[in-house]
Image (cartoon, rainbow over all chains, first blue to last red; front, side, top):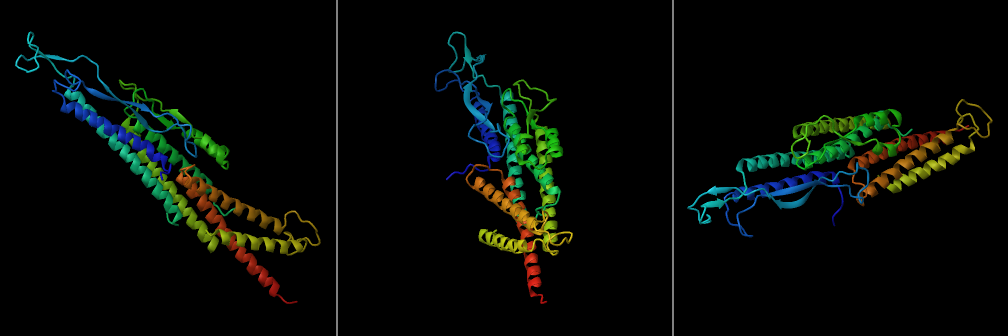
Length: 147
Length: 118
Length: 113
């Protein structure tokens, strides 16, 4: 049985899973920063996640401000920017004539910044979730006759 | 007459506001990295207006909680204007407000219980 | 709170209400002590019945808030808890007043003339 309770926590939960997914994608980018071969041939292409604000669900009503349902992860997409080329004749994937190797379009500083941003955002959403739990507990204390 | 002190209605409305405010802040935090997302906040002025004019009507309470775009924020390159630190500060403040209001309500209830049972 | 106790207490008050209606024109029940009035508008019986309605509607509101929460229709915990404390307090007040009314009534009946 899954009850539709505590939807206020769903907002923070969606933020947490979105940021966690983002961190996984960034970690994958970093791990493949030098992969000149990938599953679909050619060098690895940097991946990024696509978020969108979750729109109002007509089903949900009740006593809450409507239109707040967190964030949706629309999916992953490849970064289609140009792949850099490096002159490295000794590389096994080097072009035999020019000696250029096509490398993944992963820039480590950018990925690190993304990682830190995602990590901070994840923690912020976790804080919101913890706050929510505390608010519920405080409210329930009223019933016990204490405050 | 139902044994309630005069602040009971006001306190419960304020607690409800803190509850909805938490949702708005959570929404901003969840969408801190969503492109073209505008930070939202609950209008406290609307809520105060509701308190002054129609404190007893339950139905109007929710309508007084209007979401509005937070003014005065800078946009980043992805079109997002959520300020993470500002939202976290608001989260803490809202927490404190909710805790305070709930405890005030609790002590009011204790007083009423004492008054009733003598 | 126990719904059976609630409805029986409200029933007892109803009986008392009927009892006081018989003497609604007497000095004891009419505020201001006017004697001989057949239908006094601001009488004790009206006061009690208004109070009974108020308490009852608080109970009903709390019950429906609990129902909405349990069925997932409205997941707002604060609303449920506030409705319940409201009903709790008004019911407690109601019970105290009921006890006092019954005690006073018994005291009155014990008087010998």
